[in-house]
Image (tube, rainbow, N blue to C red; front, side, top):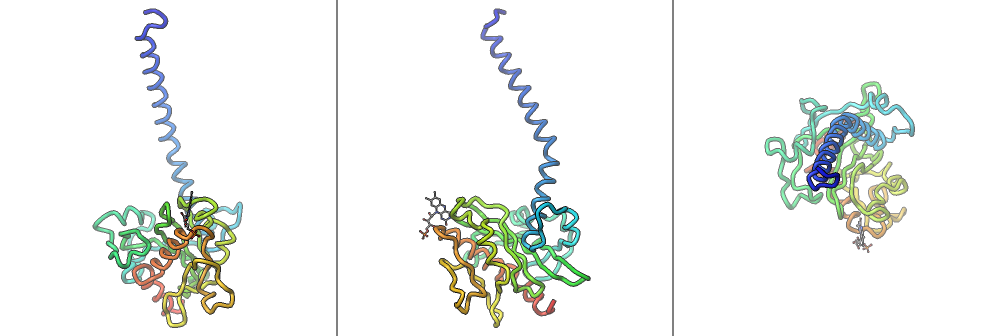
Amino acid sequence: MSKESPKKVIMVAVVTCLVCSVLVASATVALRPAQERNKALETKKNILQAAGIYTEGMDIDKAFTQVEPRLVDLESGTFSDGDPSRFNAIKASKDSSTNYQIPANLDIAKIRQRAKQALIYLVKKDDQIETVILPIYGKGLWSTLYGFVALAADGNQVKGLTFYEHGETPGLGGEVDNPRWKAQWPGKAIFDGKGNLAVKVDKGTVSPDSPMAVHHVDGLGGATLTTRGVNNLIRYWMGDNGYGPLLKSFKKQGA
Ligand SMILES: Cc1cc2nc3c(=O)[nH]c(=O)nc-3n(C[C@H](O)[C@H](O)[C@H](O)COP(=O)(O)O)c2cc1C
């Protein structure tokens, strides 16, 4: 076989491809546990951030020992059995035995279906619930935004809100990640004095003199559609078809 014979060139190319694919496949398999651990750690960090107890450089696993994952049946608003560590809300939302089809007129978050159960997180002190952290998600302009909202034990007062995944435009819809925008959330009340859903992400800036200022948050400049999406998703999940029944039970217990 001459040095540059076509056969030799093809053989070298095939062997190179094989070696490279084995290397890439091995790296993918070898790195998977580390990736999964990092993902789990990132979720914990976001939950702590929403609850307002995250500080830079803290031992996340240690801090998370004060957080108790619980499964909730959304329709009844009661805690349900099952292993929280095995629950995946997105998977459950796609399985006809564990999901609920949201009627179109109620589907303001534009998610079509959701799991019947939700995995929520409780932060307790001396056995008393201090903070409830609830996963929320819904459509923005380009993407589905996934996040957490943390409420005080009255099921009404917001402690924090954070999105950990979305594909909105940096500088426009992506301003949901801006700490200045997020800083508006702590202290807002989800419900008014009569128990009606009152939280809202406004189109513009909320006047501090407005009687609704305690419920409303400024919209995102130049990102009307992301603003509308965030407003719809928070109102869906806080409403009767989302965590409403659970939040009412917290209120009743005066927890
Ligand atoms: C490249 C590009 C990216 C955009 N990204 C977003 C976005 O992430 N969220 C959003 O609501 N609007 C985004 N917009 C703007 C919307 O298309 C739309 O113009 C805007 O929501 C209307 O806002 P306004 O009423 O303040 O003009 C983007 C526009 C362009 C050209």
